[in-house]
Image (cartoon, rainbow, N blue to C red; front, top):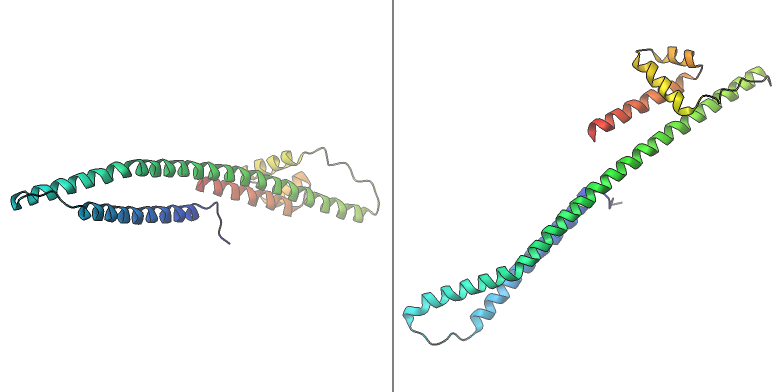
Length: 185
């Protein structure tokens, strides 16, 4: 399926539009030249042939240029507007992608925590499990990243925060992914 938000798609469309405009221009110039050549020239001598032909060609070229200047300017303005829109769409998509990735991390952390709590609950066979919901998911993420930046390994981080190693690994991997995306962008 073609991604209509990709730059390559819109650049292809712009190429074809410009290609057809150029073909139209050539056809238009050819028609104008035929019209100018089809008119009966005023009577003249052979000495004036070169001057008359040069004058007609100069007038025809000038007329064509005057007719095409607004079209070229409008095409240029459309291309600039198009480029600005593509840049804005890229920015919005990047923001949405970042927000979505953050939500995915939060959901994965919550799921991982729920699985851990379920396992502990099954192990204790109905005993009360202390409430760990006081830790906000975002706070946990920041704690994990902070400890990782202090060069603690995954096992040590998991033991200190009493969370599964998989959760710690997930947060670290996603943080690395975000950093790589920021370097590219």
